[in-house]
Image (cartoon, rainbow, N blue to C red; front, top):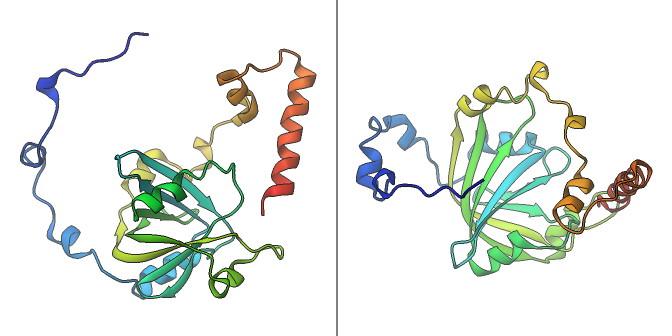
Length: 216
């Protein structure tokens, strides 16, 4: 497949041209943005077991990372401050390195079964303060650090994307077995996956055991 080259005449390169394609923003969509966590935002965060965190380094390289834990794992320190525990991962540290270089972050809070979401933007720092980390232990394991976010913008996001995708609709769930396993995909993309079914099954089983051993 040849690489696509977008024709310059079809590129939207300035805000005026962009806004010309759309109707004016509804007044409510503008004023709904808050600069702190009110009671509704706090209630949403306390129910959420899953967020996506968007970061960017100084060169503009962007990254979005999923973070999940028991309901309410993101701690509300005050109406302008959140703390997100950093759990064991693959140690690429993409989001954390980006935060050191550029503290601006965007958070998307998701609640299973809810079509609307909560968006939070702010400035982040990485902290190792035991007073913060102690309240984030799971199975007696404390995170090495937390991402502390000073909130600058908070607003609810409408349900259209989730309704279009039918994300929570069981009749639209897909069978994971229709694609290769995670470890096979990664091996195919790198060193090559083994051809034997038994060997591949053992690698899949080993990954499941690693999940159990290193989840926290």
